[in-house]
Length: 237
Image 1 (tube, helix red, strand yellow):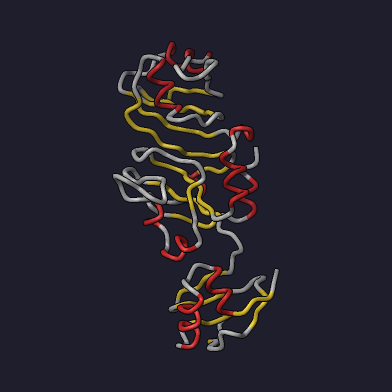
Image 2 (cartoon, one colour; image 1 turned 180 degrees about the vertical axis):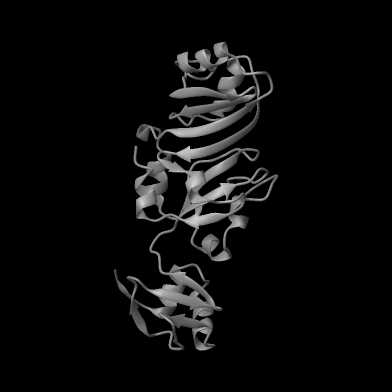
């Protein structure tokens, strides 16, 4: 917890430049804990601080930890090239805070995506040394067979990997559907493993990271939510 002037608080929360934040305050567009405050030099403790900007309520957060139900045809990049970026699904001020995806999902892959402005958190969650299990539902072009499941569990060799990669678990969920759990997080890993095993991934969805399940968050495609401490604790392997 720290004590900051109101213009600095607004700027830290991504509402714009210091000059713009001062204008918002002086115009009476900002309330603090329910009371309008038009003095940008007024200082407040940031712990449990609640701001209202343009009649929308925002709790002060030193860092942002978000979960997004990523739809298809969105890129996990701050500078997308062929499709809209996932940041367009979030409030505009999050871009000012330099929120970015934790890892990546392909543009055509749907499901649970973590996002944050906390550099150490992003690095830790993205590190292959953490061995965080991730659960995927993979639709296949060819029917799923017992031999395919066994091969993915035993390990398949990818051309640029020194050793075979294998699934932590793999279960058939339908004639053309697999649930596969991985911890390595290699580039296009699910798709490449299926191809190496003689099948083809026609659609991919990530439903869980560590103990954090997308279903428990109740997010429809394109929706996001803040992650609180108890939810973040589920990400620890």
